Amino acid sequence: MSMEKIMAIVSHWQVALMLILVVLAAIAIAPRFEGGKFTTNLQYGLDLQEGTWLQMEFKAVVAGFETDKDPGDFAKAIQDQTDAEVYVLDKNKIEIRKYIPREDLETVFNTAGGRLTSYEQGVSKQTAEDVKRILENKLNALGTKDARVNPLVGLSGVSHYIRVELAGVSMAQAKEIVGRQGKFEIRIHTTGNETENVLYGDSITTVGVPSHDSPGSPVWGVSFTLNQDGAEKLQKAAIRTGAVSKPDAHYLDMLLDGKVVYSAPLSPDLAAKLAQEPIRQLYASTGTGDAGLRDAKNLEIHLRAGALPVDVVVAGSGFVPAELSDYFKLMCVVAFIAAAIAVGIVIFLRYREPAIVLPMMATNLTEIVILLGIATFIQQLDLASIAALIAVLGTGIDQLVIITDEILHEGKVPSPTLYTKRLSRALGIILVSAATVIIAMVPLALMDLSSLRGFAIITMIGVIIGVAVTRPAYGEIIKEILSK
Image (tube, rainbow, N blue to C red; front, side, top):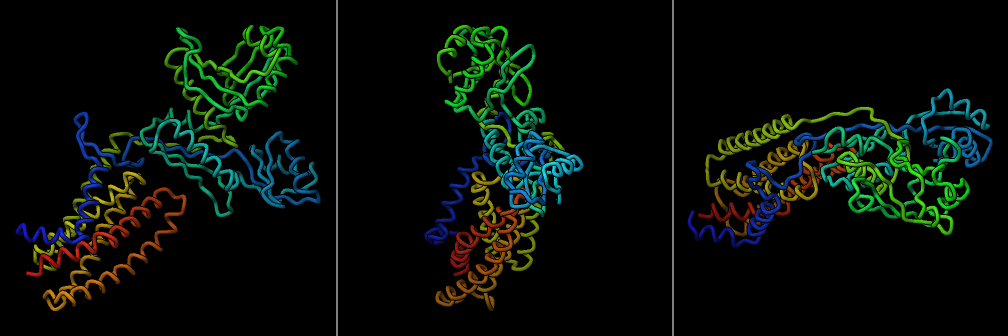
């Protein structure tokens, strides 16, 4: 192809736009060699990268009831008997944020003046969304972007489980961060080993980074600031128990999920200050060495993100080793190359003209590159997403065939006016087809099913790129090539 012909092709704004997007996509993907390995900026999901998945069960109950009492009064009676947080969902349904067997709950309801009509372990959809938000905040604090948090909601609207996928995170680290409620509590010793609650983590306003408790000290910990109400609660408890006058007899305990992370008497200076005024700035020690630093980092994450509204337990888990993820990557590349070769062979057998086949395949692969460039910012690539890429490859060729056949009616290139008319008609057919695909994919994209959602998003983006960029560009390319 002569330079004059190439310049004529590039002079069309549709083609120039496609080439600009390809360059930007290549910059976004950034293929390179680092540490002797080929790498890119593409985000990989759990299928294609070493990582962990956890499926956690909510230790709570959504129960239906009948009673002559006001629903709020009935919920208060249940709360008093169970020592659990109880929320009214509607006029005959409540959420109990504590697991209670059905038989025991029936007794509690009868005592409270009601009757149990339905029982389902789990939480409401709103609570599940709150859990999702808190877990995402914890994972953001961990510094991982390759994470998915999806509540699994049943037909009744009750969420029984929540699934978390963490690419590049070990099983132990995942369970430490995600598989626990993260409930922070400060308690004070009264007499002997007896303690009483002073405040919970919701009284904390700011959290510092892990640091040593004093210059040169080997002890790690995290500083944090209480709100005014929390500081006043601490002062009142310290004065009431005698911790300000006899600090050695009234230790202050800091607990995370019931585990003591700090226990020590008030320092003389702090005791003296508490006797005079509320103190808002505190420090929780976690130990020395690497273990102390690791515990301090975990404590920081939980303090910043807050506690989950309900307790969770790990109901299932799995780990994808690096060897298996590398194998999946290789197989995906092989499958994509095989699909591209097969498509190219079929197109060649149909037209038997390299001047048609090569631009068609180049345009189609250009669309994939642009799609991958966009995916670096919005979507992880897992096996379902790779399947969507191959589907885009196939549907893209279908639409280019429509354009080619419409233009080459009777085996020759028509006049410019008739060419434009035929190209517009082909693009109209493609636009209707693309709209149908997008409408079909929208429900999957809105669902919480992570794999299907990725498939739908990649498919929709590919269709939009094709209609808006690559199909019009191909029409101009094929016109310039075949006009001779």
